[in-house]
Amino acid sequence: MAATPALLELVSVGRRLAGRAVLHDVSFSLRRNDVLGLLGVNGAGKSTTLAIIGGVLQPDTGRVCIDGKNVDDDGHTMRDRIGWVPESVSLWPELTVAEALDACGRLRGLARGARKTAIERELARLDLTGIAQRLCGQLSLGQKRRVGLAQALLHDPDLLVLDEPGNGLDPVQAAQLRELIGKLSPRRGIVLSSHDLAEVEAMCHRVVILHDGRVHHDGALDGRRGQLDAQFRAIAAQPASAAA
Image (cartoon, rainbow, N blue to C red; front, side, top):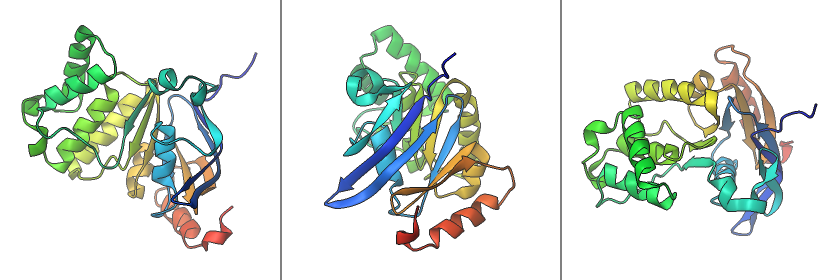
């Protein structure tokens, strides 16, 4: 019997930005139920990789597959299965939280009844019900990030892509995020980038470490606290030309 394809697979992905190669032959995969941490120093290519997975950028070389199917072969359908939260969440400042979610649901093509159900579900799940009628322009950074996550979850995607999801969250909210990730992962795959290695250890099953736009490590976390910090520092300390 043929093996079930990975939910997400990057195959030899390369990308140039502003005339400079920022990703070189990046390959890794993610199965449903897994949470993968994407790590690297600033400029390593994390955000570019996440933007390519989320469909915001296209690779110059290589391919991105969902359930074994090339995203470019049916981009609209495949990207409907992805929820993407960038590091800087863009919201309409003149809309309330509920209105912003409704607008996002309309853009996703959700019918009126489905939108209402999805909005109520995400307001409750992300503890946003109490600020549903507040203008987005009046929200704190942490509240904006939670609204951005609610937008990404409205259509119940198979793959969730999070760029620095803990930014702007206080310790209580960060703990709630870890709990939420744990509840979401059994039904989908999650890729997240974070500068907080303790957060990655707490939430992720595997890590991919990028260095100079290349995959330098891809493996499961071994459960030993602090081991990831030592591993990350060793890779980050190497000259860019030494990346494999």
